Image (cartoon, rainbow, N blue to C red; front, side, top):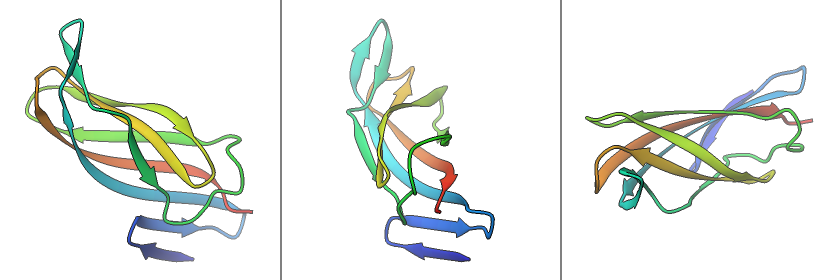
Length: 103
C-alpha cells in the first residue's frame, strides 16, 4: 500500500515492513570545532511506526560543500535530526528515509 500525507510518502508491505520518505530544508549555523550544524529539527512521519525496534534511518544532504545528518531521537511518530555542514549558514536540503514496521 503506497500513500502520502502532508508530511511525506510511505509504503506499507504485506509482511509488515514500512518505508517512510520525507524532505526538509534547514540552515546550519551553530559552530562546533569548525563544523556547523542546525538546530534539532523534527520530521513528523506520514504514518506511525508500530514501534522503534529495528528502525533504519538514512539521509542525504544536498549542499555545495559536504554535509550529513545525525539522528537525535526517534519515536513512533517523529524523528529529531540535525543537519551538519562545513559552511556556516548553509541551507541544507535533506531527504530522509526511515524503514521500520507498521504491524
